[in-house]
Every structure is written in structure tokens, then in C-alpha cells.
Length: 286
Image 1 (cartoon, rainbow, N blue to C red):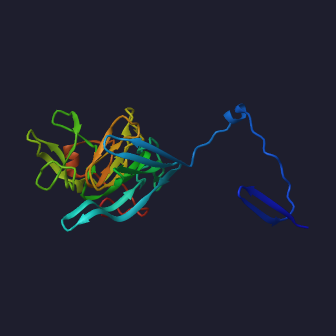
Image 2: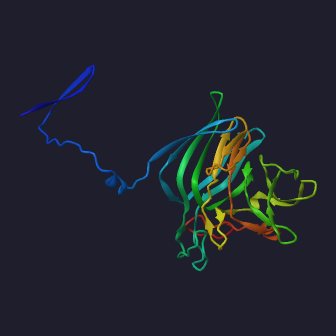
Image 3: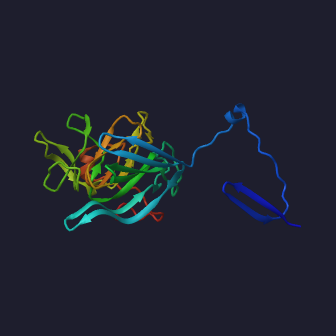
């Protein structure tokens, strides 16, 4: 025997033929019962008004651990080069030494994966006068190793170098001529009094980097500032804490916070690449 179920919504009535079902009245739960329920939104949308732009950020309530290899990453290319050009790109790595404390403060067995960790990825749009000025992909929290041969880099690297007195100072990016720049840089090092390179090495010497922030106890914490942006004009991207902004110029821009402090001899000799393939072919595989 069939029954008809009808839904009434003025001015429309919908009726469907269906088999008999048991119906129960919904009852509200108390505030006390609600307080015992915990959960997280799968997606949140935030609107932020900046000085020159209005921002819309869509954040996913998920987290991931990954280990990724790519033959190359090239973005923002034209006849004169590319904003970002990284060969043999990798996130995360395999363990070579089971006695070494890894970036997350743990030790692992040989051949285990030390993943790149990302929490709450987001997509953010920057709008001005009804026009899209740029967008970025980022992570609310990120930690892990990034490897590759950086032929051209546009963005911030946030790496520190010990100067001649042993004091850590911010490393600077330079072009082929030794002029300081964060657009299509090819070298990294220390600047002289005139702002040009006094000591610098090719970015290809920096084969692996620890992405994160220094906790102060020898371990590496999660950074909030990892993002990749694409802009048709300069955009001041708001940091997630709302305390400041990071300027991304026109083009492709990678904000890459590292927890590393190096000395010039280490940079000159080259930072060893982490093991990024399960079959370990040694440090000369790339």
C-alpha cells in the first residue's frame, strides 16, 4: 500500500508517492546539551578590509601530511625567464639516519617518511574597485622540508646567515649582477654597505630547506606565513594573525618562511639535499 507525502510551501505544493515510514517530531536540545557537542566547520569564509584591497578568504577545516615529487615547477614565465623556476621539486623526505632528530623533533627508522605537514589550507582573493587584483593559496600552519634546484625565485625566503661576527642577519636575494631583488633572484647571501652582494652564492646551492619557525628549544614549529600568490598588481596580503602585511608585487610570489640559520662556508659548500626518493641513490642523484 502506498501513501502520499506532501510538502507545502506557498505558493507551491509538492507531493511524492512513497512507502509508509515512521515519523518522529524534532525536539530542540538544551543549551547544556549543546555545550557538550564539539565540532569544526568544514569550510569558513572571512572578509577583511585592507588599506587598498578587500580580501575574501575561504579556509578548509582539514589537515594533511604529504610527500611529493615533481620534475619541475615553473610559474610566471615569459621570453626573458620565469618568476619561479624550481627543478626536481619535493616536499617532505625519507630518513637516511635513524639517530638524527628530524624537523618535527622526532627520530624515525631508516626509510620512514618525514612528511610535509599542512593544516587548514585556504584560498584568498584580493579585490579593488570590483576587479580581481590577485589571489593566493596558503596554509594556516605548515612545517616540513622543501627541496629543489632553484634557478629563479620571486618572493621571500626568510633565511638567516651568520655574519663575520657570528651574528645572525637576514639573508638577501640578488640577481645575476649582484643587485638586491626579490623578483627572479638567482643568488643568496649578504649585502655590503652599498646594498649589493658582498658574499653570495647561487640559489642552486640551497638544495633543501626547513620550512617553519624556530621554537627556541632546538625544534621547529609551524609557520602561518607560507603562501603562493598570483597578482596583477602589488597586493599587501594580511598575515593570518592580523598584525601586519606581506607585500606581494606584480607576478608570482612565494612567501617561504624557513627556520634555518646558516654560515657562509656552509652555503658556499652547498646545503645537502634531503633524500626525496625511496631508492636512495646518494647525494649526487640530481
